[in-house]
Structures are given as structure tokens and as C-alpha cells.
Amino acid sequence: MMKTSLLPLDLQKRALKAAAIFLQSGSAAVVNHPTDPKVYSMLSGTDSINCSFVDKHVLDDLREWYEAVRKARDLLLYCIAVGLGMDENPNFFTRLHDENNDSLRLLKYHPCDENFGNRCKEHSDYGTLTLLLTDGVGGLEAFIDGEWRPVPHEEGA
Image (cartoon, rainbow, N blue to C red; front, side, top):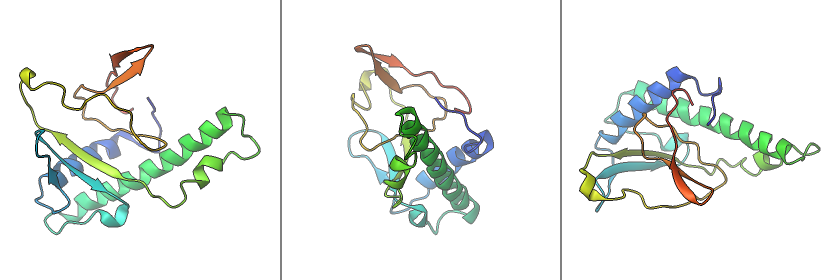
């Protein structure tokens, strides 16, 4: 977990609210999953955050979140390089992400009963980093010492 002034709690709350509004907007960028009761949108770059059905301030909050997450990503990549002893080239990993070929995935799982089963099967995310903002609803697990363990929610992290 990470807490940083780059991702202040107020911005986190605005991003969650903006994501919920965007996902309910009727935008062509929003997909209703065919078998799992969820909706999502995969946004690539701040220019992809557009929707004529959504107020400008909502889109601005999503863009601000995207840019803040990119800054946090760069800081984490820098720290990883330093942690690996790459003191002569601490921006090595950051430079590999200069093209900002990343995505912001907005995701809403609709409620379902306990008989529905595992909503998202065990998996490893692709890419270098996954930065996750949640609304506090449980479900995220980490594979530690051979078993899946719940990741607790901590506000602001």
C-alpha cells in the first residue's frame, strides 16, 4: 500500500465519484460485460476521457486523477530502480514509460448473491505496475506464501 501527497484523499474521492458517473453515462466507451454483472471502460491517455453526456468537471476530475497516477507511477519506478541499486541510472524504468502507453480502467461490479462464484478468477496483472483505487469494498487478494490472502482497505492508500 502506498500513501503519497501525489494522490491526496480528496482527489481519490473525486476520482471515485467521477468514475461512477462516467460508467453510468451511456458513453460508447463504457462496456457492459456479457457474462459478469459489471461495467467497465478502458481509457488510454487523458485525451480518451471524453463524453458529451458528462459534465466537464467530472471529466476534469478523471483527467486530474490520471495525471496524478502517472506521477505516482514515475515515483514508484524511480524508487524501484534505487532499491535495485541502480543509483547511476535511477530513471531507467521511468524512461521506459515516457510514451505513457498506459491505461486507466474504470470498473464497477454490480452486487450479486454469494452463489454467483468468483467474480474475477485468480490472475496476475500484465504490465509493470498496477495502481489500484478502491471504494473500500473487499475482494482484492494477494498471493503470499502459497495462498491467497485478502488485502485490507486503508483509506487514503
